[in-house]
Image: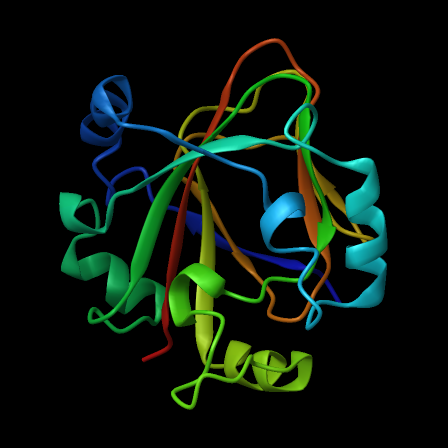
Length: 193
């Protein structure tokens, strides 16, 4: 089974020029998930172990939250089958020479790390919750040399601006910028309708 479902080309639906313009003025925050997320005791052991090989020097990215920028029209929500309420949206900028190692999405920026009682979500709980979550990967430009999205089953290295993929919940994936230019991706996370 594929780790990514192609949802179609949304170039006529999403306001790409507005999004690209926003990138130029964004206040980026540098993140490194191997230093913050992958080392958590609730993550799979292999993710905790592989985090030893990744650091801010080879696994950082910049992000900006764009939920309140009105980039998603009503038509988007009906086409991807997501609720309009309580979604999350971020633009990620990955500089050349950086990678996000293989991992499973646990949605910490969407549902948080802890349950209402303060305890951490288990892997099993996250996988169950993940079935009710849609995460869409939206490249903001045509593919460029060295920009890859990968899983054990496939590598996506060609796309057009407007193409959108859904990450299949519970599947391992990662990305690489082994190119010469920054890679810009919009990631939408929401509850399934």
